[in-house]
Length: 332
Length: 231
Image (tube, rainbow over all chains, first blue to last red; front, side, top):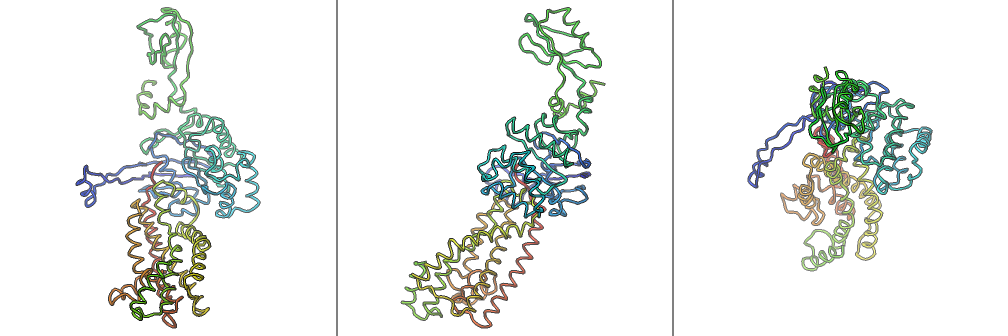
């Protein structure tokens, strides 16, 4: 469905000199620096997948999605979306994809939602029967009828995103790009959107690429995640794989009866301390929790105990911070 | 519009016969040029600059629409709206209060409609090219100001082109800007007739084709350079 090989996109930025004279000089002889937003990126997405696309701000997620949409032209490399090269056949490509950019709306600002959708129907030449069918579906799943006569500028963020989602799917695209589609929405609206994304993928077999900063989104809906940083893929695999690969660390939370200054436990390191509550990190393949607990409790009186599994968010944070190598070697 | 009429009336009282046409023709020319100028303020350049600055150009390009025709449709929609709410009322006021003459013949009226449509398209393409440049520079206001000051002078909006002296007049005759005001207004007032009309409309068409091709070419170049701002 999507094939990306050695994709690179560079931006040029003018290096400005300081001061007034500097500005004048910049005007006549500008020096540029080249910033690679996407750097030798390669991946493949097959039909029907729901892939979480994550990475820190400025990692190149949006830039690569824009290239998949045909909005931006790559500096080098190969992109193919469902057999088309997006920037060469932008109009043809945009007919077969749908996209929601959470920070921008594609609806017309001053026009009621339903009028915007009618305009989309005409632009994409959606047959009347399909239009009606989809509208019913959106009413059922997104409660579109609640605000369909409201101008877009008066919608709440959650409503606007629901309307944008409907607009993106009106022409039954086989591929959907969601670039932070839930940014700034409350928990209830978020849950609805998540369910909607999940259902669209499951029932209509729409291939989805979802960008988000919320790891709960990833855990709830995605089957596969791709982590990108500095324009490159740093991880690509299923959620279970990432847990198995990076989640070898467990944490033991111990609450002691009295305040004690120096704690030590064999094969475990103190990672966090809050009064009498201490967090110890250990490798679950080297040290068994029971040995550790036995050891600690034989030396100190204990009030409470718990073993914490690493959250996906923490794993991702570790990967972002570039510690994946150290973690991987530690756990070998 | 009233000021325009007043200026020409005063000038005619002082130097009758200096301007080559009758006072009534001249007043019609001046008043009409004020009435129709609103048609030409609907170019896409500010929209394009705004969209690229805010990054919303992404959403325009996400639609399966040819961007150039998309902009043409946007501008034309606004122009039609302006005809109804601004130009027609202004022409009615001009007709009843300011000596605005009707076209001499119905044929002249029809050719005026053709010429003003072509003038509108010529103006649109000039603005579209300005907007395309603005997509790269991210700023269009000052270029737009300088460009339109020049364009308006050479379009004969204020001073009819037949009053331009020698070389300046010859230059104005061949530039595309006369298509915008001078050609339609001269047809309406009857200053142009016979084969001169055909020639003037032919020149409009020629410029339109040239500008259309230039626009397509420029847009093609600019599109690959778009750097979407923000997010």
